[in-house]
Image (tube, rainbow, N blue to C red; front, side, top):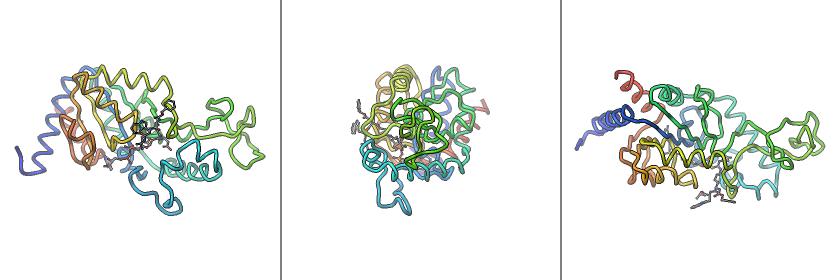
Length: 254
Ligand code: BV8
């Protein structure tokens, strides 16, 4: 056992690389920590400025939207601006590269920022939707926004109904496709990577356990301990924007 944290981390990265070299199917779950180094605040970090008196769980609900759609839309427009101004970080690019270095990789993200896709990750499963898309509240389909709106809020170009961001709110079910694809990948993979998530929001937080139950090696990448840490085979404690490139460097070295 290493008493020098740097040596322990280097050893853990080495063992993670060994597990990935042998893997047939890698399933990756990412959370807000993945985008922290891109300047997007995580959910754990208290909302700042004009939003500091709200918790995300308060604003990201159908009830909040019912009660005050103007307020909820202002919050999402503020977050959209953050996302538009942000860039993928080295962690996002390392994951996109990893997909080309293992036989099969399934990427499940809780993030609604689209940064994985911008870094070149194809077929990322958007488990909680995407903040940059609008969905019609009447037709419940992703749609265009009307140029003019009677309510001053975003309205559907085809039926005029109020639009909402195409995300999954608390209390709403995960859409069937992403739900089944993610559960299937978690139960079939032989390495499960949990990156930048506090493992508190369900059903996403249940995927690691499903993978572990199916015999997969569970590897966590997070600077802080989480509820998953005691149940993971390897915990790489550090920022994903630094540890994922380090992991890819080892894999490139063969
Ligand atoms: C549902 C989209 C049922 C919107 C989001 C079981 C037990 C307890 C509660 C429940 C349960 N089952 C269901 C619930 C209720 C609820 C839930 O889980 N509540 C929690 C709060 C306890 N779940 C739901 O409501 C789900 N729906 O259950 O429906 C149903 C079924 C049928 C019919 C009707 C209903 C829906 C959940 C989805 C909600 N939508 N997002 C939006 O974004 O606006 S969730 C949102 O919050 C994110 O998508 C993400 O999932 C979550 C935040 O979690 P993380 O991503 O993990 O981020 P967090 O900030 O917490 O942590 C960041 C981590 O990163 C930290 O650990 C930190 O250490 C680390 N970090 C920091 N820097 C770095 C880093 N890591 C690496 N590198 C760094 N540099």
